[in-house]
Image (cartoon, rainbow, N blue to C red; front, side, top):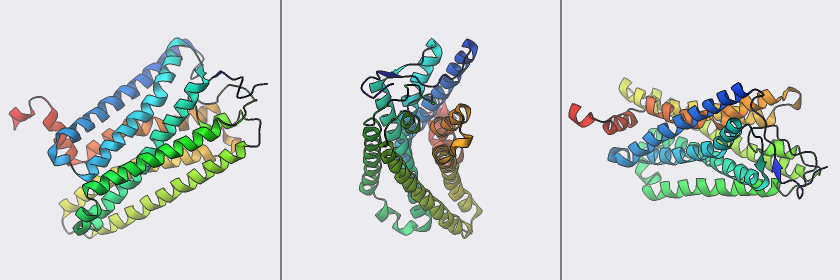
Amino acid sequence: MFNSSSISHFLPLALADTRQLQLLHFCLFLGISLAALLGHGLVTSAVACGHHLHSPMFFFLLNLALSDLGSICTTVPKAMHNSLWDTRTISYSACAAQLFFFLFFISAEYFLLTIMCYDRYVSICKPLHYGTLLGSRVCAHMAAAAWDSAFLHALLHTANTFSLPLCQDNALGQFFCEIPHILKLSCSNYYLREVGLIAFSICLGLCCFVFVVFSSVQIFRAVLRIPSEQGRHKAFSTCLPHLAVVSPLISTAVFAYLKPPSISSPALDLALSVLYSLVPPALNPLIYSLRNQELKDGLRKMMPGSFQKQ
């Protein structure tokens, strides 16, 4: 029998049984990491260097890039290390740190996506009040509130989860430290306290999602009243990518946490975790840059020879 004081390390889920598949997973995770680093690096550089991109929307996009990079760097390096060196261990303290930073960055991403939807709503539905409702100081306060809320959310869950006595085993059913798989190791009814916190977090997430959907409906109604086809295209180009990012992130995360135990399996849990923890951070730069003409122009100006061509 184990308890929290005797467990010195955890055993994350092995991604593959054969050496060839382990190396394949290493290459896959390496490709995802490099794509995320390159994409977010380009977006961050374009926003930082392009004076025409110094607006609330791109300020929040810059914060979103930081949260995406943080979530990727929290889970992927350890998984790559385990696949490359054929190991399965992570220390108790490292597991707690990984859980905290993953929750911190993924929560910040969700809060920032909700704020970005509000930014688009004000920009399209209340354009005359945009400068008042979303001034530079207001944007800074909103971003700070998102990061502070994410910090408190992550700290509360991490402290509560790792205060539970663990006595079942030290093997995790996930390739990184995640709350549901740590709760399965608990031998105390106190885990219901963390289940209650998870339920509260899910309700909070669903409230944010309802706000995003409601705002999107109002945006689409306003866009359809725009007489200019070019104006409608520009409005849609800033709203559709947002829905393309939010919808998969919320749907997969909620399903992963609320799915019935009868359909749970290591393969399904692994696929869902990849969908909500790795795919959105890697694809966000591509989604936003492809549909946003201002950002594409900013990226072109950074390319060598762009000034000569102009």
